[in-house]
Each structure stands twice: as C-alpha cells, then as structure tokens.
Length: 337
Image (cartoon, rainbow, N blue to C red; front, side):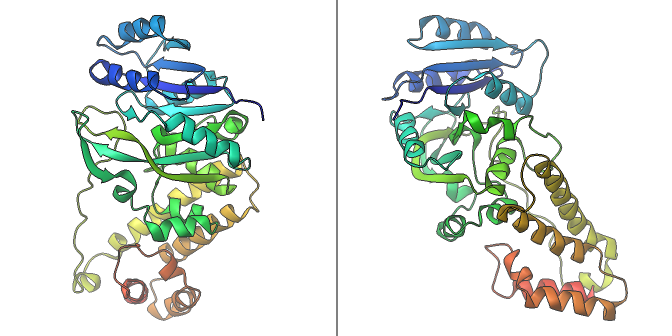
C-alpha cells in the first residue's frame, strides 16, 4: 500500500499567543506531516511574522498564505483546504494541542477504512492555559453511546441534524472528496464549515468517528470558533399554550423547516438525492413542514399529528435528553395550541 501524503490545513487570525504551542505539537507527531498550508486572515498582531519564522525552521514543507482581504473563518478554511496537495488533509486550529500519536492513529484508520472519506476524533477540553479539564468534547456535544450506535447503524444524518458533533480541528478528509465539500456555504443557520463538511459526509454515509481523544481542545474568549454555553430558552408553561399568540409557537418550527430546506438545497447540488442520508433529511423536513403549517382549525390538525405520532416521528426528533413523555406533549401541543 502506498504511503499517503499528509497535509495539514492550518488557519490563523491574531493567534500569536497560542500558535507556537500548537506548532510544537505538530513537530512532535510520530508520523510527521508532509505539508502544512497556513492561511492567515489578515492578523493584526505578530501572527504572520511568527508563521514565517516557524515555516523557515520547519522540517517539512510549509506553504504560508496571507489573504489579500479578510475572508472570515469559513472561507479562510475553504482556502486552506483548497491549497493542500496531500492525499489526506487534516484541519488544524491555531490554539489547540495535538497528542503525538494523532496523525499516525488517524492515518492508520483511513488506510484500513478505504470507503471512509471523512473521519474525526474526540478531544479533551482544556482551559486557556492548556490545562486538561478532564472533560471530553463528545460529552459536550452529546455524542454519547446511544448516538454513536445510531451513527454506526447508518443514521449519521439524523444525529447531525440534531446538531453538529464534529470539530473541524479533529477532522481528516481525503483530498479526492474535497470537490464535494467546496465551496462551503456560509448561510446555513447554526452550521459553520465543519458542520457543512459533516453533513456532506453523512448524506453519503462516508463519515466515521475514531473513538479516541487525540488532542486538547483549548477554550478561551478570543477563539474564533468554539463551544459556548447557550442560554436557556424561555420556559413555556401549560397556561401559556392557550394564551400566547400562535405565531410564537410556529416560529421556531418554521425556522427549523427553513434551515432543513436550505441544507437540502445545497446538498442536492453535490450528492444523489436518493441516498439514504438524503432520505433521512427529507423525513425530518416533512415532519417540520407539517408541524409549521398546521391549520388554525384544531379538528383539521388531528389526522396529520396523529399520523406522525404513529409513524414515530415525534419520538425520532425529540430532544435525546427529554423525558419519555416529551413526544406526546409535543403532539398534544400541536393539536391544541
């Protein structure tokens, strides 16, 4: 088996404080990269000078690229990925720390899984000082044993439509698959570049996970992309369901429908719409279309709601952490409110 050429797509923006630590972790890889493409998005600190210094001293090829105009992180990663020439392309943030075995472990995984086009690993959460917090990233994004099992059963699209589980900086992609991914859409609500990459992989069932934490994922206020705690939404009391304006109930359902429509639009430009992953998307879209367009007449709501309840869709799309009766409450709410 020929040895694959390994590229790393590293994006920087005002990352002078943490970049050297990340770079040191790349130098310590047991399987060295063959190429690092560094795209700097018009940093205003000393990042670009540091990139040039590190490139001059590197034992592997480094391609420093400075954007003529600021692109933003989505398009900066797109540019970095497009410049890579390796068979396997690893995405790299400027402020994390990779364990020495990361490249070797994930390269071996891709070598032994020729049908997999995208793979991603787990990570330990770390603080600003890179101290391990002993919390796994997958716990943060709820990629638990149940969701992993659903993924293995071919339901990756369903899992990912509930929220992205894949960190870009934990990801490797075959370069031959890159034409499916680029250009990256920038107007899908709550999905950035890595979410888009994972959706394309899930639509074709060619994305898998490596169940090992192979890096530290630094969390800090200045990071461009990261996990942030979301404030809880307003609590809806039972009495509210009969007194609030109905548009307040329908608005989030319509937003979900519109997001799914947009995802489907972009995916259909890249993949076969008859694939199983696309059918999973269509099923969820049909559910939210039904819920967001129920008629004002309560009697006319009964059949579509009861039909979707019987078909299991209210259970299928319930929050994984919700109580067992949550799907029934949602159905009752749709019929009455």
